[in-house]
Length: 340
Image 1: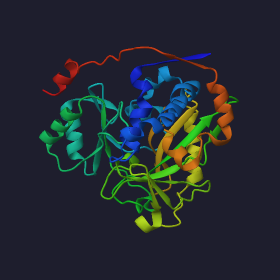
Image 2: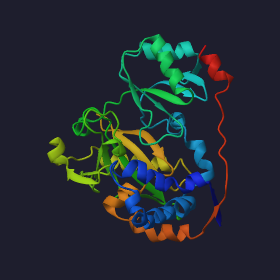
Image 3: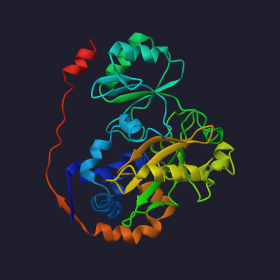
Image 4: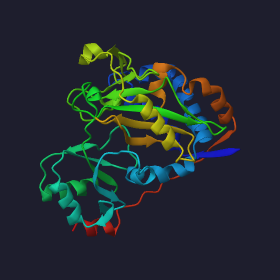
């Protein structure tokens, strides 16, 4: 029997996520608190029983750093990296570099660049575009981000996807599940495409973007869901795009199923991907505790045909609540040495 130990912070994460990232800003939570309680309680089933039954929660943190993606999946296309910062150490072209070398690499790039934190982030937090910075500006940027971030070239996505919103990287969230018999399943119909709001560079739904379900043949449903204001509209009416089909959709799915085989400790993975102009899949990130609230609102109970199997696995989880502390550490001397 598996045992899952949680802190109070994690215990209330589902409530916090809904209130801060799903419901509308003007929604009167206090007036409906009693009515919402059954919903909040139901979220605990997923975070406290389902995820512990499927994924090694105690190993999760070791896979959080987006800087290691190129090591895990070297044969899968990813955004071109200019600079990495891992625990205060800079890397350029895969080799350890000085602060000056990292600054120079950014300044010499003739591409549009994106910088983002790589550890303990979600919902596009900290993702920014770098525009016209000199050496002092880049150094100040590095100081602002501190530890654990990455600078990458802005992705040029397939024109069929770009037309939905030209300013954002329009991605897909797809889910794969490894069954007890060792086979791998792509979880349809929970796949969905996400695109940013007008003028945004992020595709995040919680920050004004929209999402549409993707059918099994790769065609995109016309219904646009915006969870921030609980609205449903039309993709054609909003963007002029109709009959959109994800390029090389089956190739994307096949790639994700292959990648999942390299994550032996995690049976349920949420993948954020897009498609390049040549049709190849591009990995953005993967999620080991993927949110399921949105997909379930659009497509019903997560796991679909495999739900009974997953519930049987969840029944084997013993959920114990402990009062714990999370230790955080100040930036060490390496950080200050680099920034001198």
